[in-house]
Length: 316
Image (cartoon, rainbow, N blue to C red; front, side):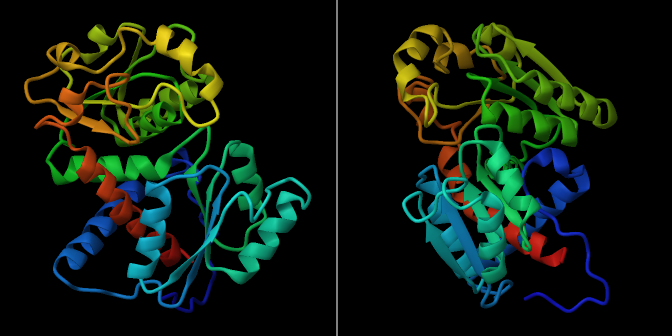
């Protein structure tokens, strides 16, 4: 529960990992792990007693809704679901007005939308912390869950992570995580599906301070050589359905299968943010194999986001 403070701190939002230091990211992970441990031991603490989270969904999601709604309930608060039928960001009422109204009635807001600019405009006019539940540019809450999974399984010590696939919001988020925490990241994208240059330049800038090693490939075999962890994402994200047929052609050779994984280190781990399309971006044998942690990773959305919400509340 929020405590009274003699001097209010600057309001913190969670729009991208690029806005966070290494120490802050690790604090959130540690807090999430502590809350998870309490839950597994039957200990329930109302960290967000009677607080309300407004959840705005312009993009639908299974894991995002379930994890945030369940997480808020477990923390002693409640979550309010607002779909694209209930609210229209920037259509009719200006985003600025919507942000001022919703943030005057709730304690925190999570938004899952298309344009990152919408999220930024909302946050600039919000009186409460705003969380990025996914935009076309970044998916930072997923990376908290991914790194929590790495920590739990001892994969955070000198990792060599390879991302195979589109230069999308997941790729951008892996770049921010690696460049902030200082580990090696390799990214392999088909020609024509490369990473946003501005995001890549940001990552290189952060890497100079953290010591991260970032390498970009168009050859997935070269990228996966000696990797300790391999991850991918769907080839066609929401809003790209019309491109799916062409993308399937363009991404030939980029499926993460046993042949590709054979170039990584023995027993290399596999992660996927889900939903996964078997025999497209990943083979069934890899997805359901003994080195896959996809379901532990999915559950950790709940625990990482609980840590994030409590941490944001503590900053006020």
